[in-house]
Amino acid sequence: MAFTLRWGIVATGAISSKFFKDLLIDPMTRGVADIVHMPVAVASRSKEKAEEFIKANAPGVSGIKAYGSYAELYADPAVDCVYIGSPHSMHYPNTLEALKAGKNVLCEKPFTINAAQTKHLIQIAKENRVFLMEGVWTRFFPLTLAFQKLIHEDKVIGKIRRVFTDLAETFPKNDPNIRLYDPKVGGGAQLDLGVYSVTWALLSCFHAPENEKSMPSSIKASMLKSSLTSVDESSSVTMLWDKAGIISVASSSMMVTSPSECLILVQGDKGDVIVPIHSSRPEKIIVKLHGAEPKTYDFPIPGWGLFWEADAVARDIRDGKLEDSLYPLSESVFEMEILDECRRQNGLEYPVEIEKVM
Image (cartoon, rainbow, N blue to C red; front, side, top):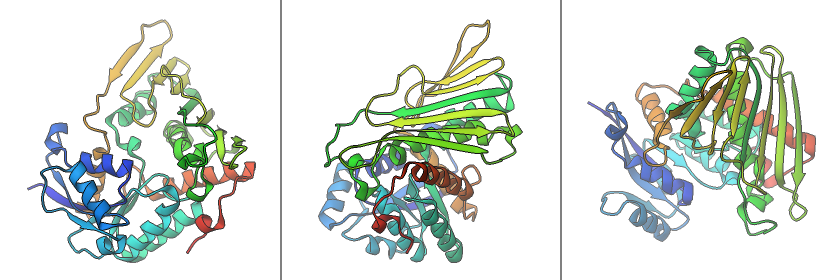
């Protein structure tokens, strides 16, 4: 019999809507027969907003409770796992409250504003013996698993030498009303877009067998800040992976849009592996070996693709695990430490209210 995981959704923005809709897709459509997802509750700042969310995203589906506060959802015994889809600055307090209430949690990326907050959440999760994971959905795509197999197991391009990763999207410029320009909610290119760039760098370099899970010997970051609010409009970080002999450059920007033909480029002795747009939700891998015709691997995504991380969470909770083996909590800490170092080198600080550890 398939294991059913009952979900509670916290916050009713765009990412929560996408996640909620993906939960409603029959797992059998993607060849999954061992688990089932059941949304049972939605919480917003008002009950009316929660009801509107359910009506808009699950027409004809009955039995989903609407709550006007997050605390009510955390107290609901019918909720097995909570998905946190609130703004960046609220990830830490919302997740902390859920963990203290004894709930398993999948929190949308970025996990928190800084590594200290991430470490605190992990501590609280362990104390309460509940599951916790950061929702970096891209890590669970079949494409991502195939990408790692190609470069690390099959070694299709031989020894990896260089890695370039990027995610840039054009947003309205210098508008203080845009979330990405607001430091009070953790705005800026790095925390919103750069997380993906750094993720692909880690998948390519940190996970290279020759690296033996070693940290980079050097991290050098640059940021171009907004003259309006001081958040980063464009960022880049160069990392040296001495043990593996790789150099990586991860960039992000909210001023321009990435070139569609290449967002991830891994170069090796025998050729290149390329992932075209979009690096958060890619559907294609191109292998270009020296002297050979390019080979394309297609990975169509039904729905949004958020269900693959939900599938992993369901299996982990079913099996009594407190963290995921594919994306362990230690890697969330590692990535947040890299982002912290990038901000430190460039003097980017957020308001103390969202940086503090409770």
